[in-house]
Length: 313
Image (cartoon, rainbow, N blue to C red; front, side, top):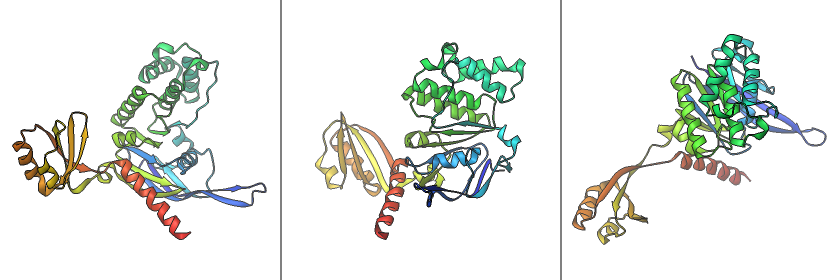
């Protein structure tokens, strides 16, 4: 059973001084997310990612379409109890401590009183904030507030978690910890749906991703498929800064980086390249198939859209 089924969700706003002009924030969206997967929702700022999440949360109403969450209608109150949500810009009461805030959310989420304190302590430990549980939130950095937001989203042990830009404001160590947390949620059988424009995080985490741009779905698939090998190309890396003429004769595209050389050649020239390095007594480090990055796929999709739009004009 899919965890999320988006069935033609659409959102159009009335804009302008007299609200007479319509602006499409989300074209009819059809999307399915399987149970137990980490799904990345990618797109530039203003693409429609947050609008989609707000629609699924019931924070705004759709112009058309519907959805099913965990096999039930998205408006079912029992479904809401099984969902965790981190908005893009969460706001918390400044004068509460982290422990007080989470205890408050635990009560709202229906966590029983005898379990509440233990659950709050465990969640603070999980997001790396046990030492500052008694500090008021007004003294927290942006990254620390982001961790508190993640904590409130997973505090009640939901089956489905929505994160809107969860890496926002985090340093590299914090981003790594959040990625580890998402992987642990998946290991625990949860489904994680998160929006981001940090493509390296999506490539490292996601089972599948969808790309949205200007309110329209532009591409979807497994990360492994979208970053498949570039047909017939390999990268040869060797130690040193010397590029033998024989390598250039093979048509290699060579780049010296530090004390190594990286060369991209046709797969058919791989054996000849190894022989050339052996003759020059150069130490081979690695030979790897060339792969398209998720960033390259993302940029190409958006570039095609802009080219098509330009052609219509």
